[in-house]
Length: 421
Ligand SMILES: *[C@@H]1O[C@H](CO)[C@@H](O)[C@H](O)[C@H]1NC(C)=O
Ligand SMILES: *[C@@H]1O[C@H](CO)[C@@H](O)[C@H](O)[C@H]1NC(C)=O
Ligand SMILES: *[C@@H]1O[C@H](CO)[C@@H](O)[C@H](O)[C@H]1NC(C)=O
Ligand SMILES: *[C@@H]1O[C@H](CO)[C@@H](O)[C@H](O)[C@H]1NC(C)=O
Ligand SMILES: *[C@@H]1O[C@H](CO)[C@@H](O)[C@H](O)[C@H]1NC(C)=O
Image 1: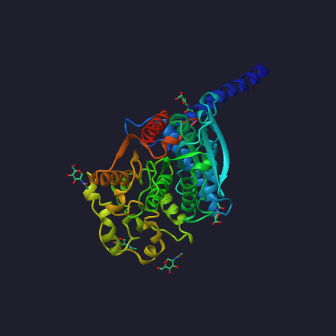
Image 2: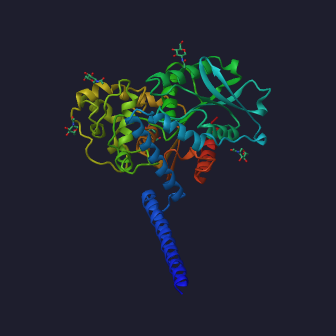
Image 3: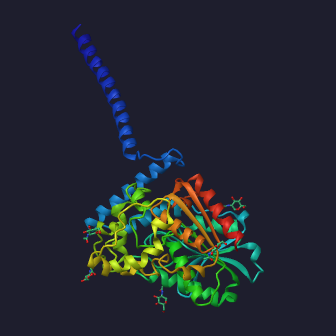
């Protein structure tokens, strides 16, 4: 009897232990799921495309940015390199090549700058190809021809134009104006010696997104001054000015942490990275303390939110800023970094502009101001605003973090470039 009891008791204990541990596992799973949902959760508008995918992506981007930051604090690795690597494995790896698209893709150097070229095969015997010179985005820090391959490949395939994707030098290895110098040299070379590259000099469009859109516009303005005639400029949520950081889209979306990385802290750090001596850029710039009272007066008409935007908010004061910030960030408000800060006379010389903006974007309002200024000058402008999507969305065409909206965007962009080429 005792033996039976002895045997029975432990088995009971095991059984009850098992139920406890099953319950525990269940509770732990529920708890962890709730925890990760609450970590990933971020309120988004109802019409947001694929909101959970966005939240997931945003969470990971944020996490890696933090890991990179910590790594940097203890001198283990550079955050920029972590982000570049992440960007490559999330997007750059998923390149599409399909013989049915009839594109020849190859890398080469033009002058001393690397490019990737996408040549529609029907041009094999053509010596005057319509051409898109493409500058990628990434805040002058990130992005390369590999991570942009999905975009440039799709552009070439959809427009059936020669696409030249420029691998310009980036911060922090190379400071301003290295990126601009590279993009300018290549563009001038292609305009001057178009025949050597089998390019139709009358059909060259400059295109780019974000920092790349900025480069495309600065170079377009420079080409016009030197007597060249680009066919059009296609600017996809371009960075157009570093003068006024109090525009409604900055105030609205910087706290919203778009893609988990475009937030206040990172924004200030990018500003700091862009300066050669990595000066500490404080929150004061968000109140425009990097500009002097004189500059505020001089430049305000070019970025006048009250005049050009349906809503504008107070605190675009005309007070004197912080002396050190003014000194150290003065390059940001030169027209070479802020192509919106030019007179109407300069803007009137522009070729047709194809402009895309997205809603969830700190750069939204400078796009709208640019559009309004062009309209008031009766310039040829096509402006399309994507009302439910976010900065960077058009890059995510293929791979695990692709968004349906990305392909719609690139088709729309390609159609408009093609119509104007
Ligand atoms: C290309 O050459 C120019 C002039 O020689 C030089 O200033 C520039 O740094 C070079 N660019 C690269 C990417 O090596
Ligand atoms: C290439 O173009 C064809 C025809 O327009 C289209 O069906 C295909 O989806 C495109 N592929 C890519 C990767 O853009
Ligand atoms: C920044 O600007 C605001 C508003 O003009 C002003 O109140 C503040 O003192 C400035 N900060 C610095 C550090 O100059
Ligand atoms: C910032 O500008 C001030 C002049 O106002 C200068 O003395 C200082 O060295 C600059 N800081 C850096 C890090 O370049
Ligand atoms: C633009 O067109 C309108 C209407 O045709 C005209 O009244 C206005 O003066 C024009 N503006 C410029 C800057 O040419």
